[in-house]
Amino acid sequence: MSKQTFFSGVQPSGNLHLGNYLGAIKNWADIQEEYNAICCVVNLHAITVPQDPEELKRKTIEVAKLYIASGLDPEKVTIFRQSDVPQHAELMWLLNTITKTGELFKMTQFKDKSGIQSNGATEKISVGAGLLNYPVLMAADILIYDANLVPVGEDQTQHIEITRTLARRFNKKFEEVFTIPDIYTSPAGKKIMSLTEPLKKMSKSAESANSRIELLDEPDVIRKKIMKATTDGENKIYYNDEPEKAGLKNLLNIFSIITDSTPEQIAEDYKDKGYGDLKKDLADVLVEYLKPIQEKFNLITDEEVLNIFAKSKNELLPLAEKKLAIAKEAIGLE
Ligand code: AMP
Ligand code: TRP
Image (cartoon, rainbow, N blue to C red; front, side, top):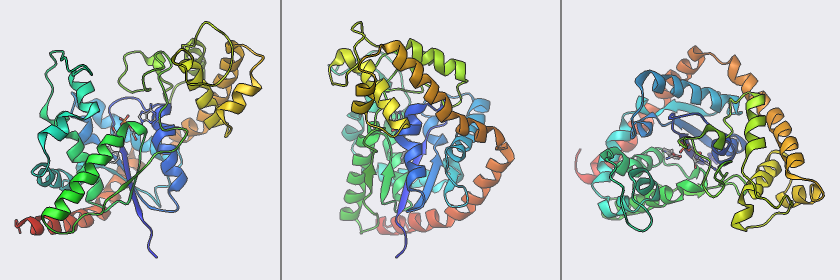
């Protein structure tokens, strides 16, 4: 039986962090053998907010290097640059015509980035139409390859739901063209929280770099960030869901994922110790955990990545062209 396909991607819009790794990339590496794996650097998504052209180019290569350094085998996994396969953008147009604007305006990510607050009040932020149509491009990315599975962090759930809705709607309105994909989130890594504001997710775009452990952070930077991480005044280690303990909970979660334990077990191991001890040990294991990724990253050249992009482009173009042609025919365009 032929393998099922998974598709996923990360935006080259900042520095990749532990949330990107534990919520997404690590899971791709874990399932790469069982699936036909397609891993994209989604540069067209990145430009939905302003990017410096040179920096964008550099980051696109850096993200691909981090995919490989994180264990994705470029011989088995198709690693590519979204803009190399223009059919994604064309399929997005077709899908746009069956998408309701109301569906896009209610997306949490759009509301966050465009300054619409939960009470409906708006700050006056002018945002590009690309930000509104972001989920439609994401749907095109996934549907054009008939992906069965999309491994992502929990924050992408709404985007996968709209992808499924659009696929079903297209299939019903025209012909059965698209596969309905499933989401896959790993139980432990699906939402890594900010180190400084532990009720918010760790993110590339948060102003304070202290809020995230970046995958390429130097050991002393990792140590400093973990030691500074927000906890609470109680200095008592236990694992629960109280908002005041959110900082501690996040540290226990991270600790447990990278040591293959459970947060409850870590809490038990440290119950007679203080936050300082926990943080110091966590910083040490994190430094060791990221070391092989960083070492491998430094060995990969830009040229290697550009060759991989070129090879992947050749492989994917015919697949994407074929699917797009089927969709166009179903609509009556060809
Ligand atoms: P982005 O940084 O928005 O390009 O996200 C790339 C991937 O990382 C997506 O699958 C996200 O769901 C995942 N991700 C981003 N931030 C986190 C986080 N704090 N915890 C878990 N997964 C995350
Ligand atoms: N929106 C995703 C994110 O920011 C990135 C992305 C774009 C993606 N296209 C995708 C993820 C297709 C999975 C599948 O995290």
